[in-house]
View 1: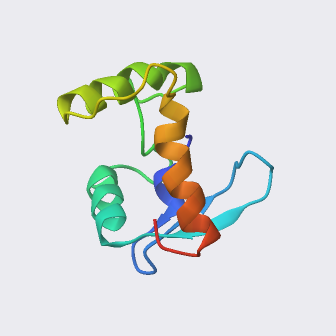
View 2: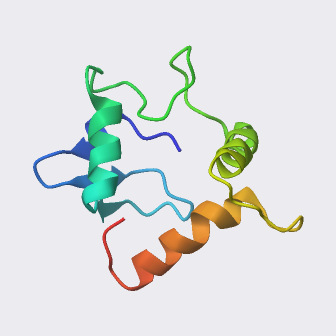
Amino acid sequence: MQLRCHDFEATSRTLQLRRTKHGKQRTVYLNNEGFSVINGATKDLQPSDFIFRKSDGSPWKRSEQSRPMKAACKATGITLPSHFTTFAIRSEPCSLKTEYRCAL
């Protein structure tokens, strides 16, 4: 996800998703936990900096997300079925929250 700090608006607690899968820009309202994570991640960064970035400052590529997601699941004690993908871990909750207009 190539979100930049200028996509985050702390006052309204929102993220602007400019590059979506279907090419349609949208606003995402953050719940308390989401706001806390994004607010902390953007602290001391420049507006053009990527929010989710590697140590060299470049954005994560899709192909580089699987290993960290699996490591996070293992570290938190989450055991996934072998056929379960990391895409499903992040996609399903977001889809449900978007469908029911809940904050992320």
